[in-house]
Image 1 (spheres, rainbow, N blue to C red):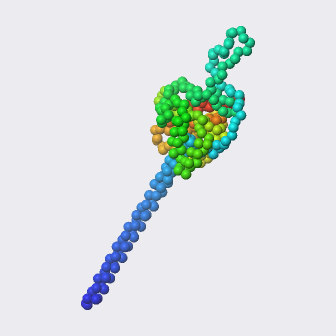
Image 2: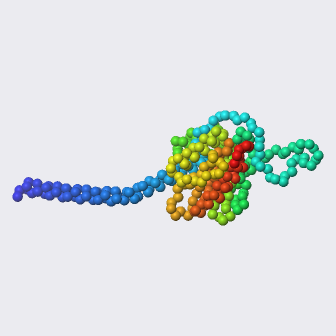
Length: 299
């Protein structure tokens, strides 16, 4: 065999080995792909579903805190007659028993006007502590029984705007600057059984925007199909509640309720031991909305 023939034979052997190795690699890749496809029906949808639920929860939390502000309009309201929340019984009116004809009633400290605007301290407008509850934990840096100052309201807006997608942040921030948050208050309630914590927020701004924001949250919570159906709030059609998804067997459950009452958006955030005592939370939410009802409204 000549040197040339030997060289050709060696090259043919090398090519055969390369082809064999390529075929083995292709077979290994095909086997790996088949294994991944077998696993995909179990893991893929589960991970995708979790991502959707987590993403939706983040969006709703941001919207509850900020409100898209789609209804913010620069409209001046006419003043209405001031009407206070129900006064405590047994309190004598000014001048009673003095022999005067008509006695003058003291000016109310808080309440609602006939056009839906509210006046008075946010701490007065918040539902008082009911029996079986005590003050709960702080709501972040804002405490557990607080009327926010002007600087705190600005900080609150900035904190919650940062929870939105980047492309929405500037637009929402500008809306809050054009139509600023006029008042805000928070109070938390802890059940005596230590199985339930309720955080109530009052946010005061232009009532057209309040109504629009509340409708936005309702649509996202009820029409998107991403949340469990929450309980109704008797006597308050404007209120709605929903439950973020929870994995089977989770020890902690949660509930979020939102309502528009004139120029106040009312938010209730609830966490408790599963199964969540939803009726107890809804009762507290109803008491809060009744306290804020405008004159002539039926609860």
